[in-house]
Length: 234
Image (cartoon, rainbow, N blue to C red; front, side, top):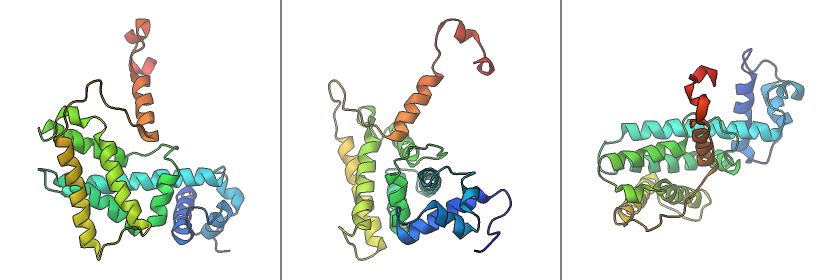
């Protein structure tokens, strides 16, 4: 067993690296916490100081992968032309390319259910922010904005899943990019035609949006004497 494959104090990150490598080689279910430990060069007992179980390691890896994806997509939209629908096209292309480049890791990130939290830049927030930008620019009616991120996510993730699973094929990555662009423009053009729905529309939720709602509720003033205290006193 090789020793000292990580710097002092970086065992947690090294275990996450090893787990990601194992996922890429064998899929989400084809390895154990013990194997990740041995790959790093430590005993399983050392790994348990950071992760109490394999599921805990998987959850942490999922959060790291989603955070990395969020950063990648944020950079992609910032580099795109700031006009029309180009930023969301860049988001879709980046998302699909990510899934095709690392399909096993992409599956793990979403199969884990995003239950652990700890994602600083969440892909959902990047998508929602771009839709808000369209509303602010007058390119999307506020009445069509409600829940629009779930429509776009369903379309983009659906394309990625079909390609990864081999159910849809294109000749090359340029064709994939063109189809992703067509998909985004079709959804956005459809949203632009929507009229306000009397009584509102059914609300979609995800683990991430539920967490956001809980955090927002926790920040709301509770009324009475509590409102007179400063933030450090609460």
